[in-house]
Image (tube, rainbow, N blue to C red; front, side, top):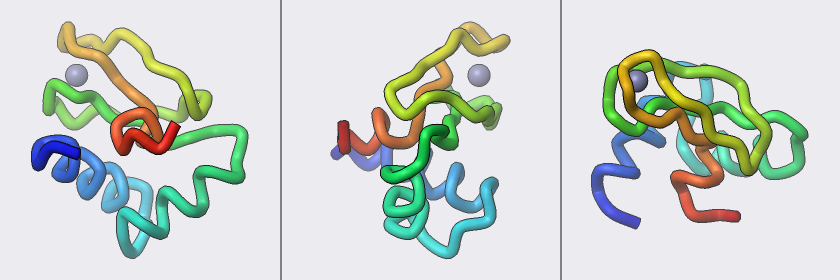
Length: 72
Ligand SMILES: [Zn+2]
């Protein structure tokens, strides 16, 4: 995992009120929706399917944290 991905994961965990990235991933992996965050760094978040991604308004891509973490 590259350092950049880790900072997005930290940001998403923070945004969604999880204590840590690990806690967020553990909670998400058994759920049908996943927190997702823009990987261009604009800070946009949304709920997506665990393997989901979406075009962001900034022109970047919003990806589920599981995709960013490389868990799935
Ligand atoms: Zn964006």
